[in-house]
Length: 347
Ligand code: GYE
Figure 1 (cartoon, rainbow, N blue to C red):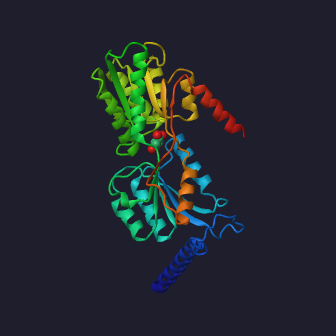
Figure 2: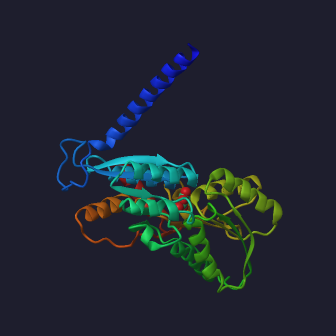
Figure 3: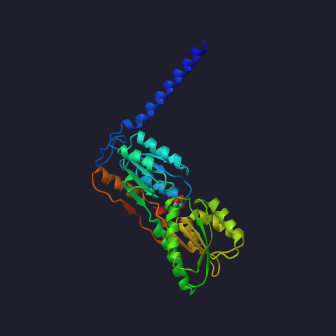
């Protein structure tokens, strides 16, 4: 009797599971593959290019802007059917998402990889399944043959720009030979943004023996950690001349810690602050003089992704690397740029 009940329950469970799998599978079964001709799409489910997008998290405004840019560009109106997954800062979640996309037989995988290492196995699986992988934002280590194209920023160039800005800033004030005590808040360890920005900045620093790195710690690209790490730096060191913070969120946290410690930034003789990203709130702080320099990192990569996929669909060749255009923001140009932002918002 007991066994009979158990058996019935098991059968029911099996049926439910089967139906779930079939329904989930259906999502992709009615999407005819590779028939996109670039025209209009009267029936949203037909002729769509199926893309699986694995985003690494939502730690910053940069990141959410990046996600929105890709979602907007890979819309149904533009001919795409997008599967989005947020890995919440866990590489294992990203690997799981990519495997899911492979088993659903998507047409393309767009991957924003948390770190550089650890992708060989899963990307080889994608390659064997014949699914092109487009890397966005961050790069991976290992063979170039694991992906079709990279679209994002040149992180080393960003790091160099930050260093070169500091060189010029000191020169203008006639202080190029004065000793500088530098602290650095770094991003997610092992990510290409952390590695590249560090490398680029160190390259410039190597030519300036008067620049001394007195402390360094990861603030994981978040406000909370930025505040914590900067608080610790301030407790440990009396003389800090320069704060290099590898993204805006950590900079916001660091500025709070600096203020809480009764210290100043932006004024002559106070701490010099260098940030990366250049989202609106940071530009306002540049315009107000609380951040000295922000090296732009452009999150609006969606249109390039869409264009690359359309080219691949048409059988046209694509480049291996597409770098987005980026500049350096200082007090001299931040207001102009903010005006551009406001005009866009008003559209
Ligand atoms: O600077 C930061 C983010 O990889 C360029 O990741 C990206 C970085 C960006 O969360 O804000």
